[in-house]
View 1 (tube, rainbow, N blue to C red):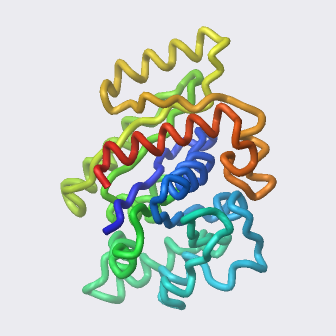
View 2 (spheres, rainbow, N blue to C red; view 1 turned 180 degrees about the vertical axis):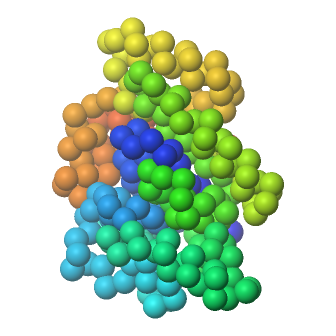
View 3 (spheres, helix red, strand yellow; view 1 turned 45 degrees about the vertical axis):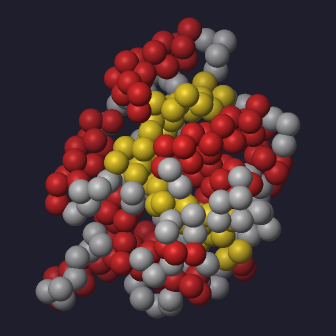
Length: 261
């Protein structure tokens, strides 16, 4: 049965989508059958694994609004052991539809839709990785309810911990009301420029705050890592010898060790 992991941080630009793509592809390369779900209306994760609009006959919006079965929305990528369910801008209107259904259906919980749907395919994968939007709204809450754990990417820059308390409060709320088994799987330091004192100071600050929750792996700031999504490839395919490729393989190994899957 799959371990479901959501990448969550309501602050944008922290490397959440980059990590979702590259963690999922690295797990696949490590012989773990992996499903990557794009839950962000911007659809950057979908583009980052080489999809375009013509490749998306169905998407996660249609799945969550019961316009298609989840099996119909799964696309097999060209990368080893990696499938994806894409997102389109249609997903931006999901909040309104779920809230409307909540008020018209007494048995419906707008935060459990994704969990219920994923229960049908969990046996087919080792890992399901969910890229969440940079908000703490209904989409992210659906991911939290469906997940076994979350990874919090934190950028190694000033104000790195801004908003983290709000995120942790959301996690506590979900744990107490809807998903008592939800765990913080780890905090991932991203975009480190080791040449700057600020980057090193942020690493120390985050490790002091989160202690052993912080992954040993730190993702460096590299041009090649930024370029890879525009070519529709994970970094391990775009530049196999990159330091970022090594970093994401190390992260995948840590995730496997921590999850025990």
